[in-house]
Length: 365
Image (cartoon, rainbow, N blue to C red; front, side, top):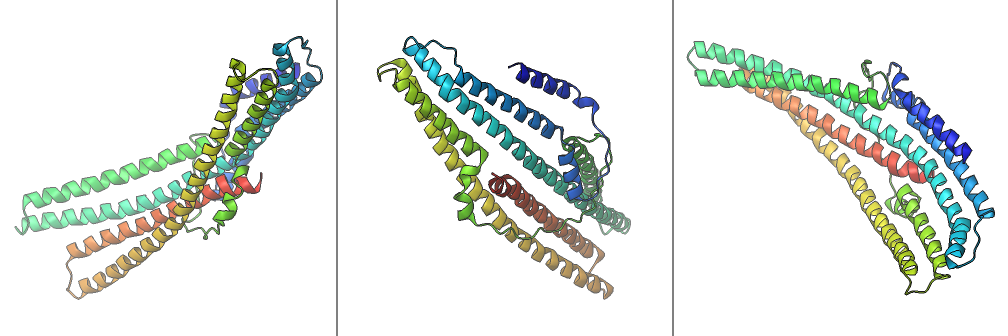
């Protein structure tokens, strides 16, 4: 007991010192960013301390089981002694294993969260490029509108509309730039870096390779997922409690009924968690499959708009297309290109999340 208190004290001291431990780092690729965050994670240190504390608690539970110090003089004390000897070690073993699994799961979750924010960062850079292009187009359109107003081929209402569109494009660009700064803050926060540190991610926003997933194989192994493992062990513990309680009480006793209800509830919880997990995994797999299809469609549309733009420029040179019409095509092309990168971002995030929170968890359980 003294040893577990000592470890807890160390954890408290560590937590209180977190605010002074941040250090500024320079990141390059997404992989470098994630590796640096994992290696410097204070959560990982806390998780390891929790494991050590639970190891001590398991040792204490085993010692308590060997030396219960409970005089079993009636059914109340007999049950108390049996619970201490048989159930308390089971609970301590569960907490120890869960703390080990949480350490692993937290690492994978950190990786997935940082990857998602990194993809958001790269996509927002594309958004800034798109919004810059659209602002350029709106500026040209506003200048054209003013020129036509002087020539009396356009009304003041049309000019005001062009001016409004230009201002809207400017605000969109400002918002995108602010979003990039906010993402920089969020990445630094996740990476436990100085929140004011500059972020530079050098990776291009490219499509990750198709993830080969044997769904049936994964579903046959979902018992390895932490939530299901915890529910299974809790059912085992509640079953043991009921077994010991039933040896001392009859089915009309409150103690018997409560233990039986707890066991039945644990079984229902286990079945529900399994069903929810299977549904979640199937949805994630569908999101992956649909994500690839969306990327293909977005790419086709982008290439179509690029071809349309190329043709439009040739028509402009031949006098077969007006500048206003070409600007409209340029706007469509810029939006289509951004849509393609947005689809890549969505697929990459779905890919990485599934890989880190499902495949890696199952493979390392």
